[in-house]
Amino acid sequence: MELERRISVVPFAPELLPAVRGFSQAYWQRPTSDDYFEWRYLRPAAFSRMFVAMRGDECVGTLCALVKRYRLQGERITCLEVFDWHALSELRGAGVGIRLMRAMMRQPERIFSVGGTSDVHATLPLMGWQEVATAQAYELLLGPDLIAERLQRTRGLPQALTRAVLAPVPRGVFGPRRARGPAGAEVRVVDRPGDEVLALYETAGANDLVQEPDPRVLEWTVASRWSGSWRCLHFRVGGALRGWGMTRVHVTKHGLQGSILELFAPGADASLHRWMVSEAAVSMLGERPRRIVARASDPQLQHALTASGFRHAGSDAPVRTWPKFGPERPHSPYFTLLHSDAPILPYHGER
Image: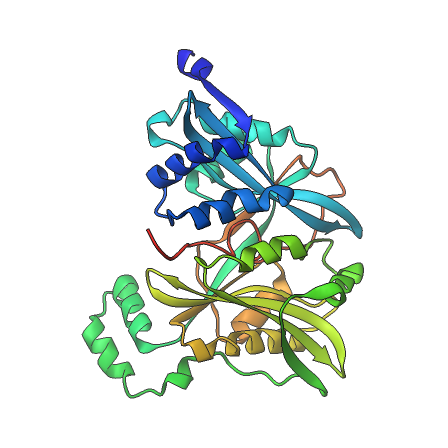
């Protein structure tokens, strides 16, 4: 009880940045430069919420959220996507994380949590959050080295033997299965999604809960020099925009990795979805990633990924919300990697 009285939970303000910086450097392996902390905590002030737990002048916990626009059964609403929910390990069991989340839950917007740690999965249901979807994880291994490492870890096969067997196989064999697009199909790389993409969400098709791309959040995301490189893709058929996508290539502990962050096409059939997956994956091959990952809650996008050679990779992400939906809860939520901090983690760069 005395510990709880000494810790206060307050909204983040710029004058608290030195304390948050100290917490970040003690808790995470993240960049330490002034530029990083300005980008990460000060620049997104207009489209984010953040609460910090303070013990005197020391930050001992944080909880962040990005403000996002969603379409819920055709109606545009503002929501929060939470991430970076952590407290110092020495305070485990002291209720600091609970107090941080309760402060966020008092905000007027609906909140979503996508994935998270085992503590997140255990705590949110106890706090009354509702699970509304599962975003399944997928991966495509692109070379013999990573396949050999995976077979050793999962099957106990010696890497030297597996590499020797796979070495004569041309690298292109490990790529995505190509899919032919409809007549008049073309892919264009663009700087930003633009208003034309936003118009796609006016008719979201079968998906009754879907996030709209927010130009402010995307501009902030791609401004990170610690998180890799991004591409936005327009998928056109006969000159008309049918869908859009976003990809990322970044460094991980396993080497260079590609990510399909988003693919969205209202009313798309299975063949159009598969063509989009194929083209998004192929667009990253020139940078020679060791693998490409994706995440999808939509069954049709899941099928398109598997048809393109991706395998279900485990590490699925439960999608939870507060407050609970009533009887008219959405039945076809659309969640990908373009949620919370998935487009920017892990950070890579100076320490």
